Length: 285
Image (cartoon, rainbow, N blue to C red):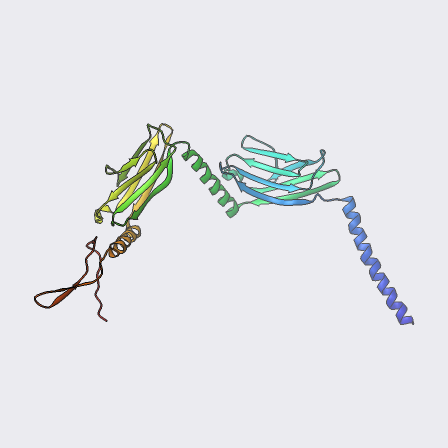
C-alpha cells in the first residue's frame, strides 16, 4: 500500500510540474504576444525590371508600428526605394524601381502592435541577390530595347527541301522610316529580302560553299533606337549546317537502278541535289 501511494504521489508531481510549465508558457505568451506570420519574405521581379521584397502577417490595428533595418541601420522611403505598410492586410513591402549592388544585404522588419511584436529577417546576399539583379537588369534592357524597332525573332538558319540555306529574322514595332540592314564580317549584304508588312527578312543561298561560313549581323533602326541580332555560322555551328545539308541532299536520292553496259551492267542512283563534300558508301550483302 505504501509503495502504491508513493507511485501515485510521484505521478501527481510529474503532472503538476508539466502543467506548471505549460501555464508558465501561456503566461509568457499573454504578457509577450507575438504577431503571427502568414507569408515570409518573398522576392519578385516585375516585367518592367522592378524588384519587390514583401512579407505578410496577420491583420494589424491602426496603431501598429514598423521599423525596417537594413544592414544594422534604420531605413525609410527614398526616390530609389519605396516602403509600403498596409496594416489591415499585414503587408510590408519594399519596392525598387532599379535594383543596384548597394541594395545587397540583410533586411529586418520589426513590427509592434500594442503589446504584440515580432521581427522577420531577409538575408538578400550572394547568389540569391546576384540572380535577382541579373534578371532585373535583363528585364530593363528588354524594355529599353522594345522602345524602338526590335527583333521578334533573332537570326537563325534552316535548310529547305531544295537544299538551300535560308537565314531569316523577324522585326516588329517598325515605322515607314525603319531601316533593316544585314552584314557579313562587317560588309553589307545586298541579296536580302525584307517584307516590311510582315517584318520577315530572309537571305537565301542556293549552293552552300565554304565562303558562307562567317559572322552575320542584322541591324534594325530608326529615330527611336536600334536593335542588333547576330549569327555565328562558324566551327560547330557550320558543321551542323553541313550535316543538315548532307541529310537533306541524301533524302533526295532516287532508288537504286540497274543499267546494261557493253562490259556488263552498272548500279546507280541519282540525286536531285548533290554537294561535293557528301560522302557516299556502297555495301554488298
